[in-house]
Length: 470
Image (tube, rainbow, N blue to C red):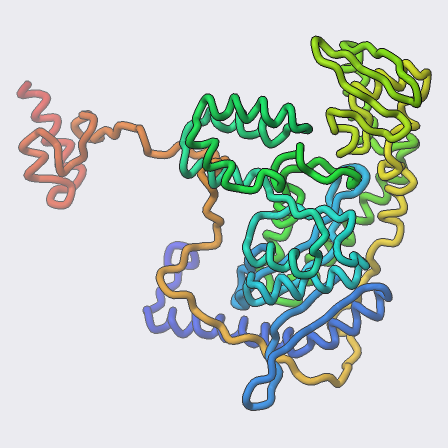
């Protein structure tokens, strides 16, 4: 305070000021929770097809305390502790589409089951037929999906699987070998890549296979969903955009998330409207890549729309009528692979006619056409007359605060490009020697009279005297 504002305050004064700030923030939080019913009514009024649900817990004194809010996993970073659960979809151009988010007290079985149940009702998912979900393997999330969507395909995020494998096996050579196995499109490639992985490190291979390979390898993914992803980077990317919102008071946080989603949808709609091609940019790039790779293949015709595509010493069976290829890339992505492109050219057909309708530009525009509608601020909210909702009590976690910066895994890149001290050899600035400081300086004079006893000026004088003696 003295250095920044030229003000001298005593410790009791600083404690009182800190308490006043904390009480002011708590009062603001309490007021926002008290008007949650009004906020819910305003969202439903402005966005007719939006689902909002607020659940409370009735205390012994009869007051309602906040429990959950759902609007049709990241930690909160303000006085209200809890979790934000998010559901993110993929649009036809391979970009983020926010579907729903919820705030809960913790990431447990009941909360995940409740969140997935709300998604199931709003999106009419039934038992999960033709639905693919990609997430980390949190036990509560697995339980929720298995309970509410038993027929859905639940894939594991390979990035998390590799992170766990990295903790047991430190070799960096495992990374390309692992991703080669995980990215295998068919059983033959999976076995060949797994054999190479085992030859390098059999123990790491055994540890990897402890995870059900049907959840993390493309060769065993269900076809028809037009998605071959083996990671949930879209969700992680969306959660990163919530970094600023998570530090705000409760309603402000929800509003920042909603505004970000509204702006994102509006921007995507403008981009989609400018697209003049039949298919999205992502689909066209994939087709161009397949067309370039198809130059190294040649086809042998059969009957009934069947072709044998020869690539090197191997052959691949392609069925144009069923839109399948034995390599399974076309089956998974909905975009013709190099073998399919070779067969289509032999059949004198247009390659774009064999791309899945999922990638049509018209469907891309339709995805973003409706968008979210603006919501008025608190001054314009109508009082619903509902019961006053109390904020959940603040629970100070045990131990020293860990800060707000997420601790990254060993496989992740650091947040800042700062060189660490590990592996560096320090130097004592006074004597110029390396590998020691003032306490372990080999010069007896400096060892006896270190910087705690003498000022830096006198130590420099002593060092000059030592050099003169030498």
